[in-house]
Structure formats: C-alpha cells, structure tokens
Amino acid sequence: MILLFDWVDRWARERPDAPALSLPGQRVTFSELAERSRRLAASFLACGVRECDRVAALLPPGEAAVETMLAAARVGASFVGLNPRHTREELRRVALDCAPSVLVCAREIGGRDYAADATALLADLPGAEGFVVGAPFGEEVEPFAQAVAQPLSNDDQARLAWSSDGVTLDHAAMIVYTSGSTGAPKGAVLAHRAILAGTAAQNARLGITGRTRALFQLPVCHVSGAVELAVAALVAGATLVPLERFAPEAALEIISRERVTFVGGVPTMFVQMLPHFARFDLSSVETFVFSGAPVPCAVVEALAATGKRCFTGWGMTETAGFVTYTEAETPVEALATTVGRADPAYEWRVVTPAGGAAAPGEVGELHVRGPCLFNGYWNDPAATAERLAPEGWLRTGDLARADAGGALTLVGRTQDIFKVGGATVAPREVEAAIETFPGVAQAAVIAVPDPVYGQVARAFVVAAPGASVDRGALAAHCRSRLAGYKMPRSFVALDALPLLANGKTDKRALAREADR
Image 1 (cartoon, rainbow, N blue to C red):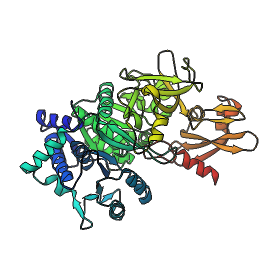
Image 2: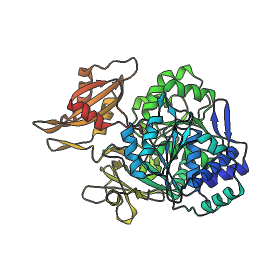
Image 3: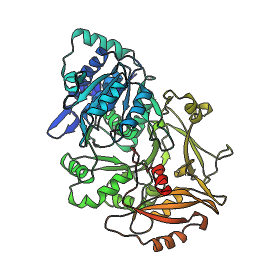
Image 4: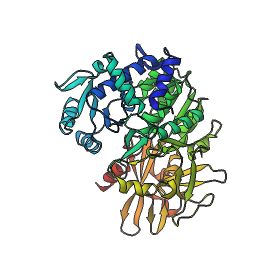
C-alpha cells in the first residue's frame, strides 16, 4: 500500500537532492519537502488534528500548499483548498460546511491582504487553529515557517509514525469543492485510492516522469491544481515550478527562465498567452495540455503549429481528474472537437434519456465507473445518491456522443440544454460554429426567454487580440452552419468571458448579464 506521502518519502530516499519545487533563487528538494511536511504534520497533531479531520488552506500554488497537503495526509486528515478569489462570505460558507480543525492562510496573495478574512473565519470556527504564511497577524495565529522548521523530538516522531501507520487508501486525502456552476458548491470527497489511480493513468498517458518540469499555476482549490499538477508531479518525482497568480507574460517568462517542459491549463490561459509566444524562448516545452472547457479551433491550430505534443481530455472533480485522453498524434480537428477515449482503467457508457445505451453518434449522458471515483459529497447524502447510480456508475451530467471507435465528443451539460419552440439546442454546438468565424477567440451561448418560442439562444463573443468582429457577417456565417432554431437571436461583444475558479465559463454570470 503506497499512499500520497509515501511517494514523497520514496523520492526523498532514492533521489534526496532532486528538486521537488523550483522557486526563484531557491530549490526545495524531495528530502527537504518530506522533512518539512513531517514537521508540519507534527504541529497539526500537537494542536489537536486527528484522523478524518479537515485542514483548510487559503494558499496559492506553491511550497506551502504542497507541504500542507502532505502534512494533512500524514495524519489521516483531508486537505481542503479554499479559493483565494472568493469573497469573505463565500470563504465562510465553505469553511462552515467542512468545519476544519486548522486553517493555513497566506497573509497576502496577488496584492490582497487576507488577515481580516482569516481572523473572521477563525472566529466562526471555534477551536480551529490558524497558521499564517508570511507576515504575522493575531496572537493566536502561528507562523507557518516556524511549524515547518521546528525539529522533531523522539516523542513527535513516535506520535507521527503511529498516526501515519493508521492511514489507508480509503481515507479521504482531499475534499475539493465543485465550481458551483449549477448551485452552491459541494465538497467532493477524494480518497487516496481515487487520487492515486487517476494520477497513475495520467502520468502514463501524458508522459510525466522524474525529468518533467511542470508549470504549477492552477489553483489548489480545484482538482486541476491539487491533483492533476501537484499530486501528479509528486508521484512521478517531477519538479513543480510555481506561479502564484496566472498572468500570461509572467507565465511565459517563468517557462523560459525555469526551462519548463510541461504546460497544462484551461483554454483561456492559452488564449491569453498565444499573442506573446514569439517574445519568449519556449524551446524547453515538450507538452501542452488544455482541458476544462471547450477549445477554439484557432487556439489548437496555433499550439499544434509550435511542434510540441498537444493533448486534451476530459475529467471532473468527482473523477479525481482526467478520465479520457487524446493521443500524441491526434489531428488538430479532433483535438478541437473531441476529448479522446477513456483510459482502459475506466469503464464508460453513453445513456439516452430513456435509460438505454446510445448508439454511435447518438447523444446521451456520459456515465463513468472505475477506481478514480469520489466517495461522495461531504455531508450531502442526497446529492451523492443523485450523482452515483446503482452498480457504481457516476452520472456525470455531461452530454456526449461516441463514434464507433469510442472517441467522445462533448455537446454540453444536461442543465445547459434548452428547447426553442420544442426543438433541442446544445449550446456547445452553437459555440463551436461561432468560433470558426475569423477573429473570434471565444464564445458562450445561453438561453434567454422569448415570448414566442419560450427560449432562444443568445451568444456572447470575445474577439481575438487586435481583431474586430462584424456581427452581421458573423450571423451570416452561423446561418450557413446552423438550423434556424439554433441561431442566436443576438450577439453580445465582451472583452472576456466571466470565469469560475476552474477556468470554465460562468454561465450563471452571463445569465445575470442577460437579465439586465
């Protein structure tokens, strides 16, 4: 039985001087990471953290987040990433839901001071201990640096060994809160077993090894940052190159300076970086991975033109990361329109509304089964029962169609589908048609009320840098590709699409915009 922290301890023994994290002017070796996480785990035990407790972390991608994740796992607790972009009230809702025993908080992230937020959260969590990364605040909040630097006594080591020995693959290593695109966020409980199963498949499919240097810019409050980047690198013995807050030119500068080989992100990140590619040395990059949202064809073409390996795939919080993958030789058109095939470790099926198996090319809800699935939603058995079908199938809520060879194309979410005068419209099909128009970088389609048809499509369009989009020409372009009932009745120009923490388009925000 090899647990998350066992992998780090293994690399600390076998490759003690190999870098686990590469920071400006500093390298954190696997030996140092293992020791610092043990010391932090001992501090957690000293302040009362016990098996099955929660450890909340309001941290950017980086050393402290990884150490906190490992320390929580060592004592059988669950790491809960809080979203630094959230308001105090949003942070409070998640904190009250998971009731952590410890809050580890950065004093400052991206210019925002979190001292008042952390103080308010701790006041709402009686008995919870606080650790601060950075400048101190409050007499009852411990310095994080002190916790990871304090040498372990013999008693500390004995208590920690006893605690770690009780952790199993079925213990929850993380609770990852969903994006809330369809309502209040829910905490998906991910066990060591699910996380490590998904990571093993991902590393094999994407070629993540001990020589990989991965850009670590995705938030640890989401499965993409916490599992698909952080855990994947730790398990492979790879090096994480943290970027506290994503900005396109900052990301490219660190890729160039740190000789990053693996760049994964949501499509919006690549849309923002592409105009600046020519100004930076990207010769070290071997692999681009884009996922989490539909990818405009122009973006895929530009990335493929660099000659690097390009992948996309599909997964969700409840599957602890990727389930499907494209191949390294996948043509550009397929990279832009499909999410590849399921890894052999997982079972899948496409189910029609009537409950039967969909024929090739027929749209239905994607169901998944395998070792990667979550345990359920924290404190929400009703939502768990709604999502987990009998015989272990996960109802994903994603609508897909499969070709005869098993390649999957996503066409939308079950809650996104709407009807225009009784005819069904899948927003992704309309978005894809819009994105083929020259000068369009991104598009999002929602339903808005209509007195005649009940609902009609409204499109929100983001132009590529330096481009302008003529709405009349765009409408004519769409009419040549879409049936009349699928046609957007209006096109709204935006500078950028509103995003959730995971990089997906926030369609609830677009609906609010449409209601104005």
